[in-house]
Image (cartoon, rainbow over all chains, first blue to last red; front, top):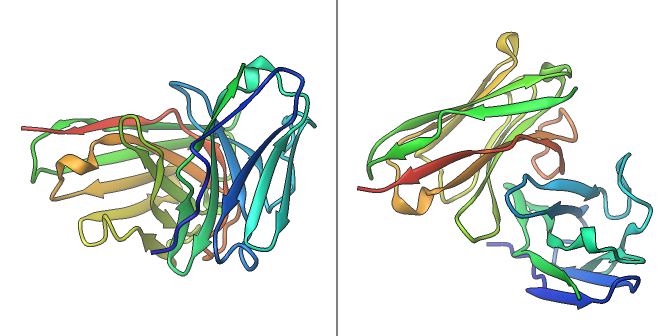
Length: 106
Length: 123
């Protein structure tokens, strides 16, 4: 079955830039979506269609795509950005999630 | 306010059945595809099933195919998940989520999520 691969963890200091990658063979042909999930809360969509930002999501969140890898970039990381982040795309029969990346703000 | 509220979770024995419901409000429910996504304790997100706005297109993850049935009632603004032959590995928080589109394409993202309902399968 199709898999999306994310690093298990990323750590950054406040004010720095965090980059979380997601790799998958079908990503050149399928859009990617990114979700933020804080403990005990439902996921929140932060990026859609590779690089679009929903209303209400801070401008420091951005997305990009290159070949089989998509990247979520958080510029000027704040303590409140500490969370799990999941990428999501599609295969022939439905949605697929990456394994998730825990972002730690040092 | 756009809102999704799940209900119906609980403790069930292996082999048992449960029906989850999701009540939608604040948007035109019949214009959107809908989804169920689950999260096992301490694990990541797993897509379970999707249904298009008119129920014409339905998709299931391989892990639940043949055991779970998704349905919707647009007149009642409600989404359902009938879960049969439940297994311990089905233990999870189940989220209802609105698709970004109404189409039959199953690969879109999800922009509105409920708070989830917990299903525990244990003897």
